[in-house]
Amino acid sequence: SDIGLGGNFSLVGVTLFDTAAENGSIMFLEDGSTSNTISIQGTEIPIDLSYEVRTTKINFYESLELNGKNYNNIFEGELALSVSATGTFTVFGFSQTVTFLETQDLVLIQYYFAESIGLVRAQTSQGFTLSSELTDLLNLINITNEIPTSISIESVEDLSDYSSD
Image (cartoon, rainbow, N blue to C red; front, top):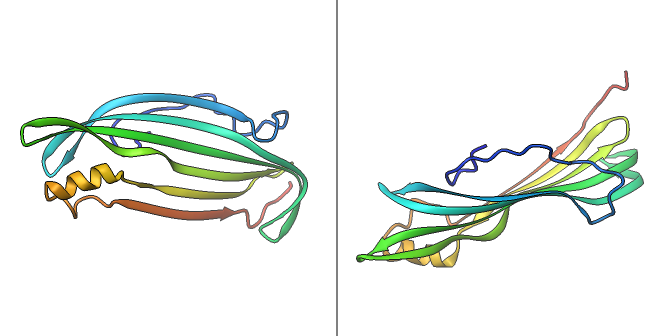
């Protein structure tokens, strides 16, 4: 999958659900890094991107009300994609490495699985905030409107109906 800052990655064997895991324990963890370039006003900027994907068991409930319905044996988990990125600019003849993104969760999903049903709810937060170091540099070289400095998107998906056939 392309995460939008150059570079692709794929995941194999992600654990989303493990009832034997302790509450708060990490069920899956994969990290890595990639290098690529992005174009800013026609200038190719080399970037280094580090990422971590993790799933965590948050809790297990014998009974829980979600979406206005009561479910039994609910597994609550979390999936996070955490990213940090640096880029190398040449300004006034000097090469400078600048932090684009401090380490932050670009995607954070809190999800609930119900016994004999499956996924009944997923709450997703997506977004980023550019580092002040990068925004200061972009202002210095008069690139202010091309890149948003932060984005935040929240969404909730709820199971509305299911059949037990």
